[in-house]
Image 1 (cartoon, rainbow, N blue to C red):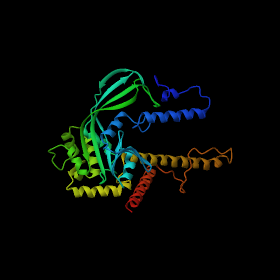
Image 2 (cartoon, rainbow, N blue to C red):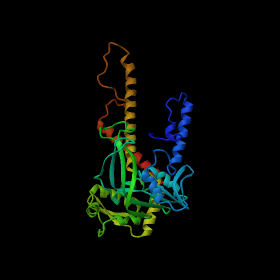
Image 3 (cartoon, rainbow, N blue to C red):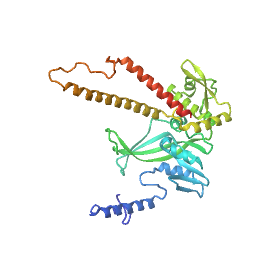
Image 4 (cartoon, rainbow, N blue to C red):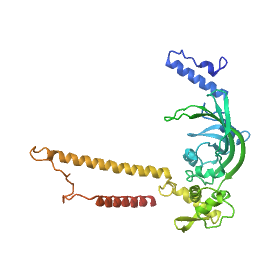
Length: 372
């Protein structure tokens, strides 16, 4: 740290320390001084200015910050209500929020970036080189990208989702950080700062998501009509419909060709029943399995099949070796002997049919276990 005064954290970095124990002591002392200089920071380098500004914005007078509650750390405690601020994806705190809402009332603050000003620095502590606005612009519809893996938690009677739409300033400098693969134009983010709050939405129930739908949408509708009304692409409208169906804001009422038809929930009671059903069936893999979990499941099945094939091939080669070493005068057989008693080689079609039957039997057993 350049220009640090004697007695500060910068003066503790002594490269001539001979023993490792003394170095560890200096590191601990440096961490303690850093925490005293930044009172609201949770840990050095882990909390951005944006996170601290949002904590101050949603903090009530007399409330506590960075409170340890069991195995978790809570950003803000406003009386009996917990406030958790999440800049990254909601999937990272899904299990944490699911545990907390069982006993406490929780507010999850998820900021969405409407505009971002990029400030390029010469180095970590270097001067500013340039600044410009990023061409990417966000909207409130970006919330569905986050809710895609958060439908097991939202909606809940003890959960309130607060979504501020903000403009931020991102400070970055050239570098690769801890990336294993890097390019010439890589950068490291030094800090993020809040410029202003453009808008804010609060979602408590599934029916609150109806505010994000276009006006004058005729029901029943498919994702093509939804995409045209929102002015987005078809695959983005499919994601919106999927999330709203999982949360209970939309109901599937039929099909038009290969496209599903959706209708708004009849009443708040229907949304509440859908919400409780989602919570009850959250542990069943068929009802609440995310796309990533399905990919992992398919990968495991393929890996198991490859392992069985390799094991069977190894067993066949072991059984053939003694027969070939009985007499050197007898030539080795050209075709590999099969394991079936009839001696006829099995065709690939028969093997495929047996595999399909085995997969079907496994799926039936899985459904029976899920229904119990």
